[in-house]
Length: 315
Image (cartoon, rainbow, N blue to C red; front, side):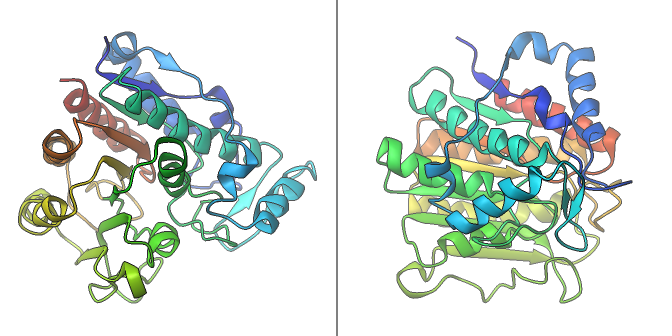
């Protein structure tokens, strides 16, 4: 049995957010080429997801938001819906497939077909709010996956970890009043760095107070800084929460070569972080871990980091 499932669909390459947009098809092309060249795709086998059904999307997003995205994609042209977020006729279909990949990967892990999974998806999702596409994101893949887990598999404790250079505002807001979902984000932070949320004092609300853990870091943070947070801050929180499944928003734009961030991580650092998360999953939830691609905009750095991440998942 293969340890790791890998999800990809050619339609992910059809989505375009605008001319010269950093979140472009070439990101995935570089990842797939690198994995193929290094022999990893042959070991993994590629699974093509189907689209998430509307009822899965509307567990996180309003029906009006889903209908709005579908309508705009049906116009047959590129449409700007924000200063950094546009969509073309393929966007809604690709976004539904990305959310579907999350759900199918979770199903495979929960069924014991594989121990863990990686979803090489686009568009990313962690900035998408209930009624707002933003930050290159349209549907919140990891949040949709978490709710799918609870509805389909009845889990009472799901952890979402996010190491993208940008705070996962959409994911946080989806669960900030929900004690059944623990959300952790480590990210570059300042009031002027996108999206401007994710301060340490943001810890959830109401019954969800204490189930959100933000670890903002300054520009220049390194592999060692991230590992320190994972071992000294995240690990005790995970041990208290005892998740039954871990979902990972795996953005690789904290890499030192990424044009959109100012952090100093390396591909080797992402491998070390992956090992930390895998140990958490092994200790608490039989190794059940599903990782979803978020950001990462230097093609070479992102591809190398994904390969390093996968080698640890596969080992």
